Length: 175
Image 1 (cartoon, rainbow, N blue to C red):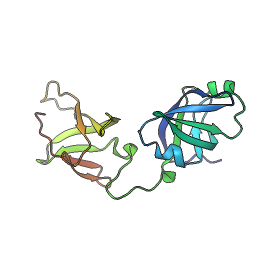
Image 2: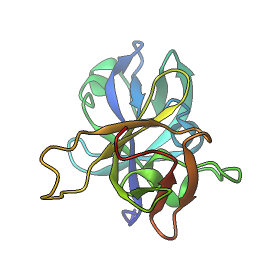
Image 3: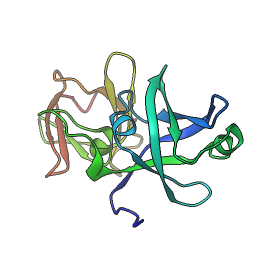
C-alpha cells in the first residue's frame, strides 16, 4: 500500500486494552473524529505501516480499538508508544466555521491592529473549550516575549483563513 502524502498525527498508542489484542489510543483532540471514522491507520512502530481498524470507540478520554490481525495482548503491548496517523484527505467533513486542530497548528496569528502575536504551535483542551498555544515570533526588540494561551472562542477569534495561513484575534500585545 502506498504511503499517503498527507499523513497527520492524531494520537499515540498508550497501551493494550483487554486480553484479545485491543489497543488504547490517546487522541490529540477530545473529539477523536478521525480515529473513530477512518478505517486505515498508519503506525510508526516498528516501522511505518498501515493497519485496518476492526472497531473503535471512545472509552473515557481515550479511543479503544481492535485491529485486523491483532491476536493477543502481547502484540498490542508491542505497539505502545507508536504514533497513530491518518491521511488528512480521509478526515470527516466539518461544518462551516469548524476546524481540525491539525489545520490550525502552524498558522500565523495577528491581532485586530495587525500586530504579529506569533504562531500556533499546539492546541489543548481545558474541558470547556479548545486553547490556542501561541509562541511569539522572534523579535530582537522584545527581550523575552511569553507564550500566549488564548481560548478558541468567538469572543477572541475573529477570523481563521486556512488559505492565508492566518488567524486574527481580538487580543492585545500586552495580554
